[in-house]
Image 1: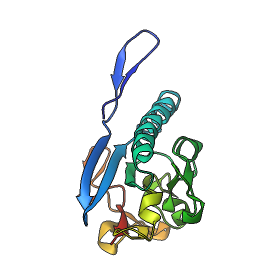
Image 2 (image 1 turned 90 degrees about the vertical axis):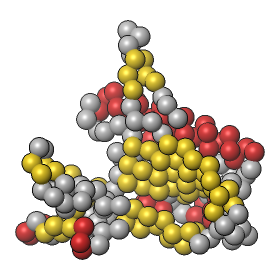
Image 3 (image 1 turned 30 degrees about the vertical axis):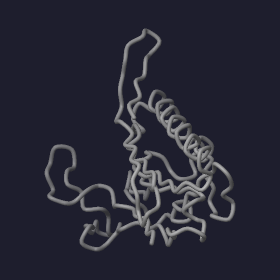
Image 4 (image 1 turned 120 degrees about the vertical axis):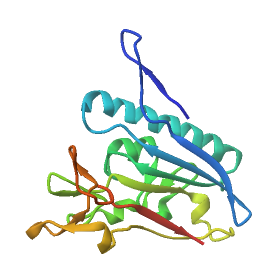
Length: 194
């Protein structure tokens, strides 16, 4: 899904596309959205872009759920915002408990993973959880062939580097233009469905 933005002068600007995939898992249709939303740099412009992109995704999710209220949907990626940010909570109708999810709402299991001691990336020596996975009510329904098990951060020791008293952080590939040879400045996140 490509989104083109226009400023007040009609000049076009772009951001990363949204990957949308319709596939099958265990003979069940599964809809996947993968995003890398605009960064927190240039906050005023990018905050608006993130909100618009989330609205576009939510519109597509609502279309799918209108046709099948029990559709299996996963939305994942780098949101460049925390799980409790207003734009994620409100634009996506995200809930923090699977029991709260109704109709066209999504469950955001990342809220329970937020902490000062753990996250998917470190910014200014503080853990952040920008990498998220949200799921629809259909995947929470015990009456289907797909069963949601858990969501977590994959922060295995081999992905870390020790920063003195600060502890183990993601082992970055680059700092600026300096190559460090690590994996990434973000830990992966994952969801288990069986």
